Length: 130
Image (cartoon, rainbow, N blue to C red; front, top):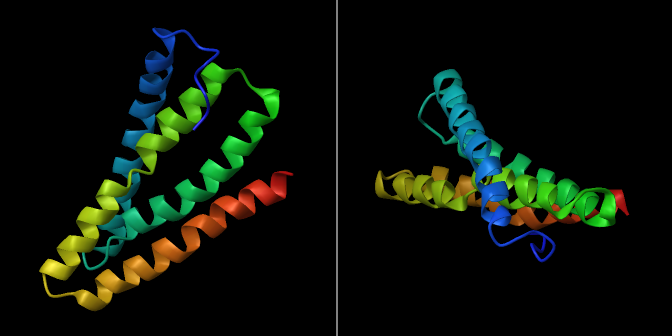
C-alpha cells in the first residue's frame, strides 16, 4: 500500500474511503452475480475476487509507485478500491463455512486455488511491468 506521506492527514482517509466504496460494491455485485450464475455449492465469487484482486494489486501498485500518479491516486486505488475489493475476511468466512457444513473437499479446493497463486499473481504483475 502506498505511503501517504505526501498526502495531508485529513485528505488521506478521504481518498481511501472514496476508493473503498466502489471496491466493496464491486466485490458484492461480482459475488452476487457468480452466486446467481453458478449457485451456492462453491464460493466462485470470492475465488474470482481473490484471483483478480491480487493480479490487479500487483499491476496497480507497480504502475502507481513508478511516479506516474500522485500519492492520492495511489491511496484511492490500492488502499481504497483494491483494499475493499480483495478483503480476505470473506474468503476466510466462506472457507470456514464449507468446513462447518461438511464440505471439506470444497474448502480445501478454495484454499488450494487461492493461497498458492496469490503471491505468484502479484509477483507476475510486478515482473511484467519492470
